[in-house]
Length: 100
Image 1 (tube, rainbow, N blue to C red):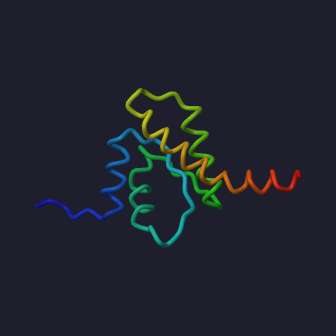
Image 2 (tube, rainbow, N blue to C red):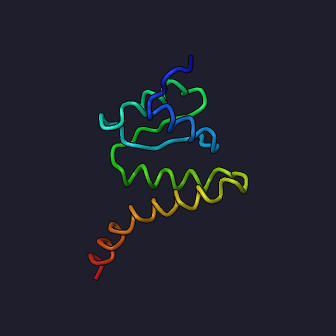
Image 3 (cartoon, rainbow, N blue to C red):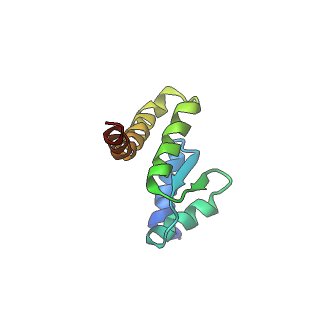
């Protein structure tokens, strides 16, 4: 008989299948099954807890730029960088408007 897996376990299995080593996020009760699954696989997948989503996105972008990966991960890195830029965009706009 096959064990029933939670949605969080399925997600973590797919992250690992695609070579993910680090996950950045803000822990919260809305996705506890994912956090539980990450904890179960903590020897393979490291979770970095952040205080704010924008910080998590920028950390993920920096991680993607600093860690050399094979060509198969380039597409994932590009998406990660796009998310980081989206979170930074309003902050940059506010900063530029203050300088004027």
